[in-house]
Image 1 (cartoon, rainbow, N blue to C red):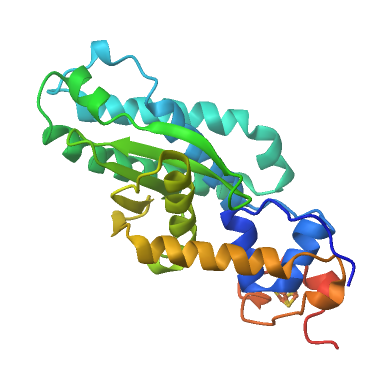
Image 2 (cartoon, rainbow, N blue to C red; image 1 turned 60 degrees about the horizontal axis):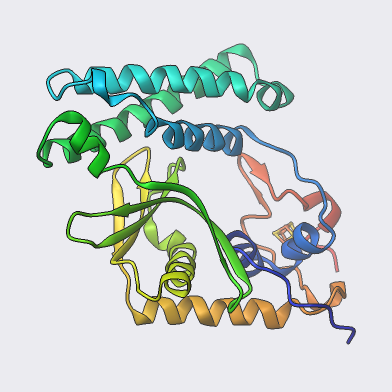
Length: 270
Ligand code: SF4
């Protein structure tokens, strides 16, 4: 077998390999193009809004009026980001009605997140600006581990007043099962541990259509990440397609779409 250099993996490449090795081959070795869809584009838009949300001028906001004020800001940020993504949105060929539907749906999600954020503000002490600062996370951080040859972008790292750290990811999906994302969260925990030498206390997801969901970080979680990363490295040392079997599943074709590579793969043909 001709082997190649170890690749730098990411939570999404590892998840893809676990879902289907052939999908990994098309995506990360052949690097076949994939078609954008409204769910990924609006996910990127929501992420951008939440990234910029923490840059606002807090000096003009008080605890009394903050909730309405924050919702107005989020609405303006969403309009701006929707405009910034106009080219990508236009390429999707959605009707005007569909675009409006997804815009409003995204706004409802962001308002839901503002409600959660407001409840956290109310549990802090000090002026609005002081409370806001206490809750401002580090955002969009790239963590790269040479030890594990793995990297990942983290949406938010939150530092509590007691010194504890939480790593959070935003999800716009309808499903709110944190177990579907546990490997991604375990890898983030390992990347953080590798960089800082200490574990975050918790990792979790802001399900923008629902609530936040958290898991405690422990050695077991880090070991799971190490094991899965090692397995994907060992399994991807060749470019020979025969080492990347098809793994047909309901994710090949479903009621609202199909795998990006369905037509080239033809999963049920030998
Ligand atoms: S169509 Fe199915 S078997 Fe083929 S690459 Fe996609 S997920 Fe894998």
